[in-house]
Length: 92
Image 1 (cartoon, one colour):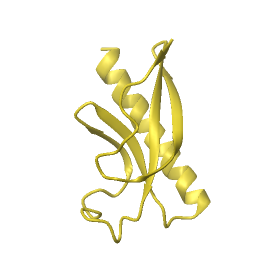
Image 2 (spheres, rainbow, N blue to C red; image 1 turned 30 degrees about the vertical axis):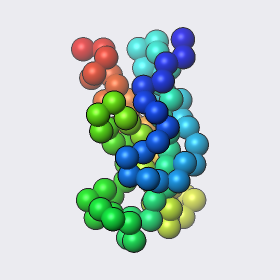
Image 3 (spheres, helix red, strand yellow; image 1 turned 45 degrees about the vertical axis):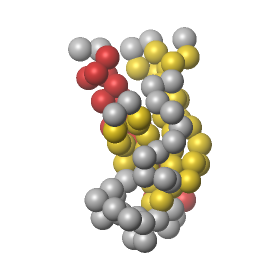
Image 4 (cartoon, rainbow, N blue to C red; image 1 turned 60 degrees about the vertical axis):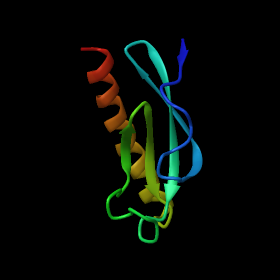
């Protein structure tokens, strides 16, 4: 069963890197991963990356100035946060 929770556009205007698929409670969710330069973007200090939910939109933001290893780590942490959020929202 394929289910998309949100559109692929971030309210923060990040550059789309790809989509991760998370299986939670038998459902498959597509979570967009977007890169931003937090140091130079408006509201960058307010949004330091990771998983976000705004209205019916969710995604993972990573720092585009980070190394590949740091980006992978940010994506993995964002996936864990997204799984916790989806579990709490749809399995409780």
